[in-house]
Structure formats: structure tokens, C-alpha cells
Image (cartoon, rainbow, N blue to C red; front, side, top):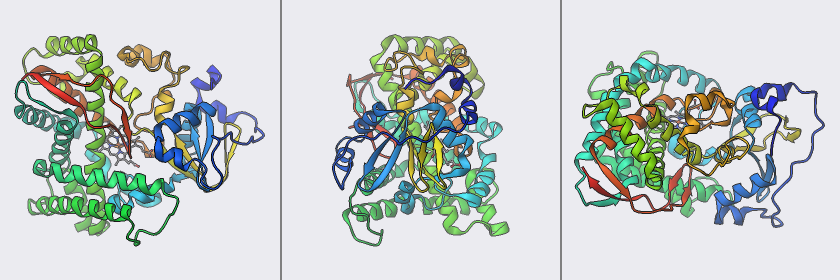
Length: 459
Ligand code: HEM
């Protein structure tokens, strides 16, 4: 899977190469009619790893639907950035539509452009700095529930914490009491999506199939929370400067956002804005549990910079090791472990023709684990994320937040939150991770399967 070093440094150079004759895409052998569907159902992540071994662009078949898995950073860059206009989000996203509707993650074309512009100020650096206080407050609230000797699922704790942070920063509302409802809704929704994706029989959402009923229940649970959140935000006035105010004002002033669109954006930001960050922190703690010398270094850095005082956004540049630990955890365990695109026309990538309407799956986790990009790729080495190491390799080899026009709008928000939360947790508590190996659960995002059992040693 090695590519030339000049192409590595400049992904565009590969695109400007003389037109290549298109070659057929190698594929993972499958069964007649169903292709690799059973494999996909049994072990999605393992199957994608196997496809990646077939080649940097390789195909598997979901019954009659071919999926082109791209495990090459240059080609991923071509699809996500250089040729972004030749693709839309993949058809697989339709299964998320009942939940997210036409929010920023799923919207296309003009709606996407308009909403991205509308929401951008809420994620601007100045605004983010104002969220830092809430992020620290909510981390401390979470820690205040912990007792020495207590065992719990740390992943669940982190999910409740990031939900509370998203609720208060983005919408000015306390959603802590809704944590269990949101968790249940998300769990049901993500399983319904995977069930739909891996089903041989594709029927409309109106059919009362078990997976559709699961999704309808998820939507009911999440809608209850989201509509209440909107009502509370509206009751408190619409010019508080948070995302909800922006959305409500856009609706009230130029009627450019319908009620339904406000709901879709709130749902998208609430879910996209907490689940992935919680998973990032869970995987970070998992790796800290396995690498005590790394944890000791994080503790040392935090103690040296902060002593016992409360962290602020201004401290973050002085905690580079903590950031590197989080970034390295996202390399090995990217919460958004892949992302799909559908070709709007025939496109040639790496000499292979992707026919119009075909699906390309950018294998983010596979790219992050390539030995020619990251030597000894399975080793947890935060040093890879030091500034000098980053400078020495092409930026696009690392893409936990995607790239191009659909790059994550919340990437700085998420990194700031993870760094503030990690430093605050290390300052006030010690937790022992009680499992040495945790399998990833590849739903819409990558979660630790069965959670992250942990014991509080100090708090
Ligand atoms: C570590 C945490 C996070 C990770 C790993 C992550 C990852 C990603 C990725 C890979 C994409 C691009 C998907 C694609 O290209 O198809 C994306 C998009 C998006 N993310 Fe995040 N995300 C994180 C946190 C957040 C946060 C905190 C928010 C909001 C507060 C957020 C909101 C969004 C939205 C709205 C989009 C769609 C952007 C668009 O299409 O214009 N994410 N995220």
C-alpha cells in the first residue's frame, strides 16, 4: 500500500498526473447474491480491515451494492477535498435521517452551505473560549458524584458529562437529568442504523420492521428532550449568543429556518456534539490505563502548569503532552472511524474508476493504522503528535475530523473540551481502568464495547 513520497507530501500532485487508464478495483471474495453481507453483519471492523489488506482502494459487496473502501490518505484527500464537488454524503446516511433530519451533518447543497455559515460564529475561537468555564464546571460536577473505592462504567460517566457540556454551552440548558433518555435513544438509533445498513431487504421506513420500530422509539425519546430544550431556550429569550439563539432568531426574523429545521440542527449538534467527544475521552482513559508511564507524564504536566488551581482556556497551550495523548488516542481509536460519500459522476481515483452513484467509504481508522504513515502503528505513542513530528509528515495522514467542506465544525470545541476535562480529572481524581483489553464496538461511531469499567482510587 506504499505510495511515493512526493505524492505523500502533495496529494494534488497525484491528481495532476497524466490520465491513468482505469483498472478494475480488487475485491474481497464473497458469496453469490449476498456478497459480503454476512461478514459485515458478523464483524464489520474485522471485515473492513480485511478489505484494506486487499488494496488501498478495494471493494466489498453489500448484496448487489458495491462499497469502495479507501485506505489511502492521498485518495481520501482527493475525495473529501479536491474532488469534493463530485460527491455527496453517502446513501447510508438515509438511515440516520429519521433522527437527524436535514441537520448540518446530513444536509446537502445550498441548505448545507447556508446552515454552516449560520452556525460558524458559534464555533469561532472567541466564542469557544467563553465555553471553557462551563466545560470545567461540568467536569467538576461529574467528579463530585464520585466516591473513593466506587466502581463504575467510566464511559457512561463521560457520556453524561459531555452531554451536560453540550446542553449548557450550545443551548444554555441543563440536560443532565436527560442523560439516561438520550443514552437509550442513541443506543437504539445507532443499532437501528447498523441493522438497516446490513439488511438484505431494504424497505421504506413506513414498514413496521423491528429496526424501524427501534428507530421510531429512538426518535420519540430524543424528540422529547430536544423539543423541551427548544421550548426552554425560547422561554428565556432569543439573544443569548448561543447556538439555540442563533437558530431561533434565524427562524423568527427571516423565516429562513422552519420549526423542523431548528429541531434537526439542535438534534444534530446535541448528538454529534457529545457522543464523539465522550468516546474520545473513553479511549484516552483506556490507553492511559494501559500505559501508566504516559498517565504519570500527564499528571506531571498538569501539576507543573496548574498546581492546584482551576484550569482556564489560557492554560491549554501549556499542556501540549495532554493534547498529544488525546490526539494519539483518536489516531488509534477514531470515534468517527469511517465516512461515506456517493459519487455524483464517474470519478477516477488512484487509477480506479468509481462509477456514478457508487459509495466510497473513507477508512479513517485504517488510514491511521498504516505502518507506512505511522511506524509501529498499533503502539500508543503520544510523541507522534508533537509539533515537530506533525511537521515531518503530511497533514492529511491524520483525519479524525474528516477534511474539506464537510470537515467537523466542532473539532476545536471537542479538543478544547477533552483537554480541559482530562486535566481537571487528573487534578482531582485517580481512576484505575479495570480491563486491559477492550474491543471496539463499531456502530455509527466507535465505542468501547461493554463500556469502560473503572474504580475510583482517589477523589
Ligand atoms: C472528538 C470529537 C469529534 C469527532 C471525532 C468528530 C468527527 C467528525 C467527522 C469525521 C466529521 C465529518 C464527517 C464527514 O465528512 O462525513 C464531523 C462532522 C461534523 N461534526 Fe464532528 N466530531 C467531533 C465533535 C464534534 C462536536 C463537539 C460537534 C458540535 C458541537 C460536532 C459537530 C459536527 C457537525 C455538525 C458535523 C457536520 C459538518 C458539516 O457537514 O458541515 N462534532 N465530525
